[in-house]
Image (cartoon, rainbow, N blue to C red; front, side):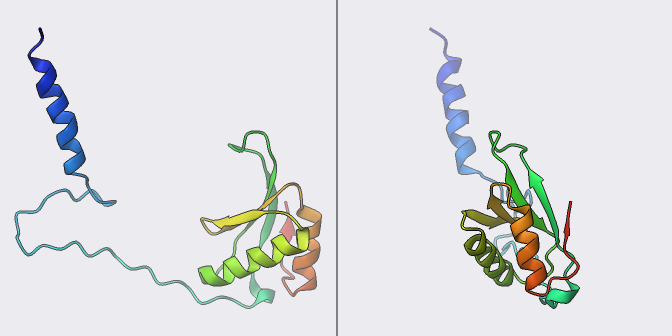
Length: 127
């Protein structure tokens, strides 16, 4: 019987106890240490006429399904989610807002461009 097996299992279970945070800090010898992550401020939302939005079709890593991406939005996340909801309602499809992009299911580039131009996003382009 191999005696190293219980030690191997013990090491695997111990690794779950000492998870590092997202910046790589694992342990500090200072008893009063508390990690304070840096806070990023959201920029103020620009006016629709100043937004330079890009509309493109994407199929990568989506199991062959195509989605319409709207990128280049500068502003608060709440305003981006509001824009995403309005675009999804206009197109009549589903989608989401992730990583500063509006994702709309299907090839909806023409509809999205039409809606953006109609609502004051004059610098929008379809790529």
